Image 1 (cartoon, rainbow, N blue to C red):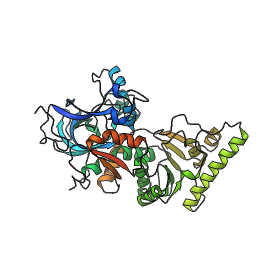
Image 2: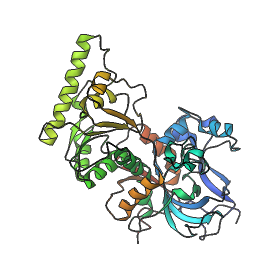
Image 3: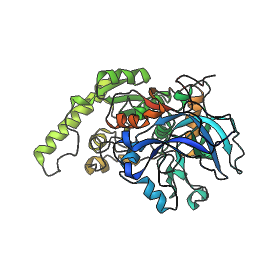
Image 4: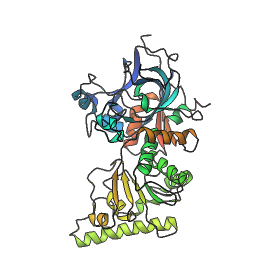
Length: 412
């Protein structure tokens, strides 16, 4: 079989064609995601002994491939070429649901025909850090699959390392199953991966962007562990959505204006005004909770605009945990509130196998809603990334159909 099958279908299970259709980014198209992504016919990739070839039914959309399309803050194609990869293109996508079509010679726990999802932690299995038994997501070789690696989910066939492959929840459709794994496993690591500040019953968790993909998973994880989540949103509709997911309440960030880098500590008037804004925000948290409680964990990803406030309102001995910087990376922290009250600012990135399996078990058990938002056709992958970049309102996670002909298929 040399020619690719049409989008909305896949070949018979186990029959791997020579060619496939993929949404491809090339360096001369860097920029607007709507033009950076173009459907091309390319070779189906070969797999190594520890890898799996998956026929993609649906692909999740995440912000990382907005960056890939723009070529910022890094050119992922150039980086991989420097490491010896021959390909002059990028096929992204860090979430999928699909069917196993081929397995490498060293893979013994996955079979052709298995229905699967994939977590986004990717690393060199021979890395000395990993061989020493340390957290692989902290290893020098750790990468985000489908962003820093090639042949992600925006194609009819995708390549993943066997350790990344997890069983698909039978009660979810293909599009539902493709929606939550990256954000869910990221949120799981953020809330349950840092000893000393692990989510526990009775905790208060402040969740930035509560109605988005990450926030929706964080709220549910907090609720499952007996904690109370307070969502930060941009309007009442988003706030009510968060309450349906289990948040005890929400705060509309538009009611405050102190966001961004605070005035220098020597600027007394500016500091006074900024501090007053932080205190008012902190009181809003108390109002939602019905008591004077500060958040034990602040679930962060906006970064530059919000980190100063997050550090300020966090409980003494608590943790601000951050996995991204969607408003920018140059955050400023008033260290007085950091060291005197002994707060923790913790970076968190990706997931390891243990965390991904634990999160996926919650999905398998029906305890986590995948929060499927808008479903796009395969041709709309570029538009989906543009919509995400522009902040178009979507509650939950975006997904594009690939092998699945329509939404809602794949439930058993």
